[in-house]
Length: 225
Image (cartoon, rainbow, N blue to C red; front, top):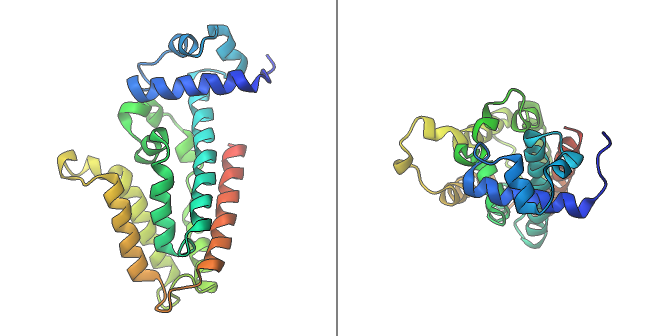
């Protein structure tokens, strides 16, 4: 069956799904629930989405696109937006513009439920690999936005450690002992800024150009997934 081109209805369905997923969680929300909340028939849902998994993935792509636009907006107006510290700091501010985006970054099991255990879910299929981050670090070093006296491979591995531990520490440390995600990201920004920004403050303008390209590549990757 051809997909409906009713964009207004599709966005209304996604809005309803986002609200229900945040309140009840993905597992407890049915397609019928979403249809009722969106004011459409259950059949209308399938004119836009193959099923609940497909609907969630479309919602994730929409939120990532909105996040990327907000992130770039913040990067552009921040004089230090092209530095590593500025990148992490503005990532936090952009994440906080959407409760659903925040849940995605944490890969919140209560909200995303069994989808996280799905083979080749959208998070696994679009996750930046080691070579992508390594290329990013080398580019930032080349333009003077990151110190050149530290091996790019080491910096890349440290960035990966921060990224993966941000969403997986709750399997190792009691939840009550884990600081708020906002505080963690700001802490990472401060640590990375002090450790990796050149003594002269770094070339933020050149760094912004690279970050814009990274955002464009990310949008393309999700559009193709």
